[in-house]
Image (cartoon, rainbow, N blue to C red; front, side):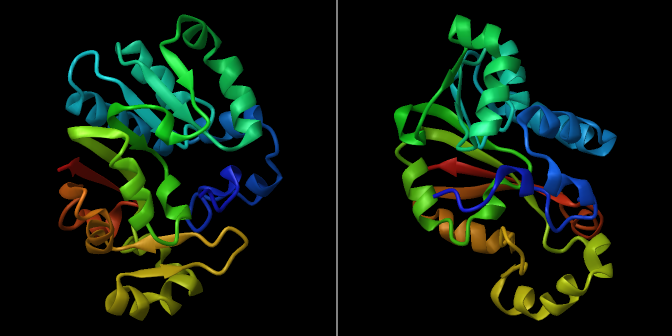
Length: 231
């Protein structure tokens, strides 16, 4: 159920470096993803939002954990964190970066999301943009998240006007208006979704409870945070 390479996660954004396609190791990706001050600010906001929603001591699943940057922060805040990451290169570096937490079992690697039951699932930096359809994913996550828990996703904003300079954005504008979704023609087939499409896919297991940003932020922010509450 993971259709694209982890080092393609940022494809289609203005921040995509031409060199990212040549990033082959988890360590190189780790350094690359931390090099952007803007990305660090987005990550900080995401982590702050997740921690603010989590009850004290609640367990969390970091879905598409990459090299473990978010997982390490959640574990430091007192949350036992399960990590699911299908990329072998990412897992190898995660094991090094989070070795102390793994030894203490405050971070636990899992081969499948279904291997744990948690209060929340987090999916940062466009992980869910690699799925063409989220209906089966939310059905699966409904068996992972406790009732009343949540899924917090950071996804690429399809309305972001900074991407209007690119032909693929202009070519897909009508698809976005008519269907609320489109895919970028590339090796990894990055998909973009309007929030209403995500809400439809999440039902009946989850409801879309919060969307950040709102208003003018839809035009100015590359990423949007979607909070889905388990029904």
